[in-house]
Length: 283
Image (cartoon, rainbow, N blue to C red; front, side, top):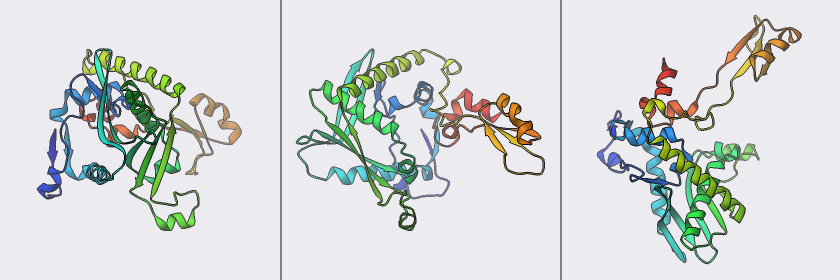
């Protein structure tokens, strides 16, 4: 991976980065399983050519610092323990931040935005935690629940005072209960993901399956019924046909296509410059 330093930050800042590949060959971590086959394969193939600026990695450094601090906490169990289980022709791995042996509880330290809490957007954490629980079960350890302890990096006390739906504290705990049904569902998810990754490894870049809209963080397109002289839409519809059918009754004069942006592609995908889909968007 190539690192630029546009702001001329100290070398210590660069040294704090982890620039190694996240996965060894033939291994897929719990967090990797949350990604698309296209993103995983392209990142691995083009890792040495991917370019990042050190200033864009500030939250990675902060997250690493948070983990190091909590590793010092004494509790009966273990911290930063790695588990791996063979799946198909690969291995699935996971590193548990902390396991409370007495209460059979996994703790995972997170840094997050208040947006995640306000929109109750915890699906990725739920899957990650259950993958950890599944890995530990295969290694003879029982997990009753997973607790994600999230430090909110953009929390505002003034907003908390004015809005009771806003997170009231800069720390939030999200709990996932572990049931046999949940473990069976996550096992199915793991097997399907590993198979998808193994199949994708055999394909060329142009043949890789496209990421889904959810994986691209892309909403559905909207079609706005508009009226000449008016800046805002009269009404939004899910399809152009529906918008056209209702335009006259609403007093509209034309339809405006509002194409949803794949938010992850531009700002949060490391392999975007090597992705044929992203290149086609730019064109």
